[in-house]
Image 1 (spheres, one colour):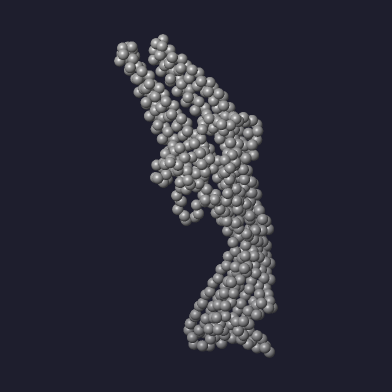
Image 2 (tube, rainbow, N blue to C red; image 1 turned 90 degrees about the horizontal axis):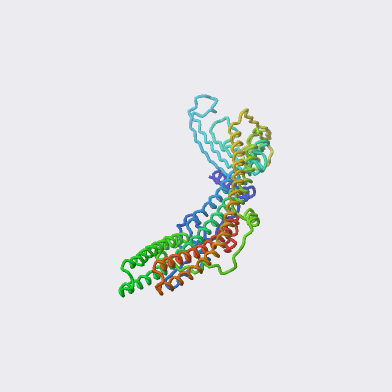
Length: 543
């Protein structure tokens, strides 16, 4: 029992020391990543939030800024895209795994009873032996490629054979082993390459996520203004229907008084029916646009929120001075701030690392090996005679380093053909070439997008000016035709025609105003300024 107790104490000491050793030699892992409001692992999707404070008189009353904040908090697409960042963080953790120290331990016990069939077995008729082994090993690979092993072995042998000097016998061994690659796998880059690539991949995922948020933000702005345009169009159509109804009522009174031929009543009546169709279509277009905006904001998840009518407070008519954008300056800004540019830069940097790692894989496998072993035995030699000691005697003798063994060697593995490494090198070069073309394509796409956005902005400004002029002339035309009709100089046909032209002019002005608001957001999006414009910061993605 004393021996077993000492053996267990020694094993526990070795295992207890292992975490301290690992803490000294393990590479530091990045700090934990967090994104504000991020769905943590294992949690169910949280319900929508922030809508109650915007409910006024039973309506969901939202400014554009309110809609943006609600979308950032509740948009499902953002939550899905956010998980890609978490996946990239996990990839960094996986890349660190080759440098995780390991501790292994084993205990083996074997009892053997054997009939004596030879005098060489030591004399007793039944040979009784007990063999026990305990081993604890710590292994670690450093970022230079150096592999370190420390192994403690303890053996106990008990036998009734007369050929053993003493029984039980304890034999302990402590071995330190060091293997250093000299060509393949040598140096920080060859070993940290996967970590660097994973870290670059994390930067790519962050930039990609920022680009996704940028795109979703633009979609929210576009859908917000589409709802306003649909609402204003419905108002215009309703006013047009009201004017047509007034003309029809006037014609009916004239018909009753005999001042209008019976066949002329159909023209004004048909206009009422036609404009009622336009009102119905405008009503359902507004419902569709509102449903799309609710989906952007996450307001379609809870039935009680989805049932609230929308009240958007923004005015499509620009209150401030119209902005002017210089194309060269806008393009330079886009190349500096677009998250897609940062993403492709990080990807190209990762490609360079992959090429260098793949080149190292073409090198021969040459490594330097060194081992040092010290042993101990529970024996003492007194006057040429062996005397048995305790298990502690074996430990003391081992740590006395009186019986060392030194070993030095070089291992070489030279492949005459290395198809796997050559293919990996080819893949790395091909991926880098593809990403360089992707970078050029991205520059072309951004250039075209900025050019189109600037042109759309200029077009919307000119369209607003022309639409205002057309609206003013349409109003004057309608007044003139109405006056002529009342005097009996013209038929109702010209009044109805003027009403239709006024409706078209009003719709054109609303469309031009909304187009200007959307074009302004599009320019900010394509130049990478949209998040800053609305003071949106993506927090919690840095390590």
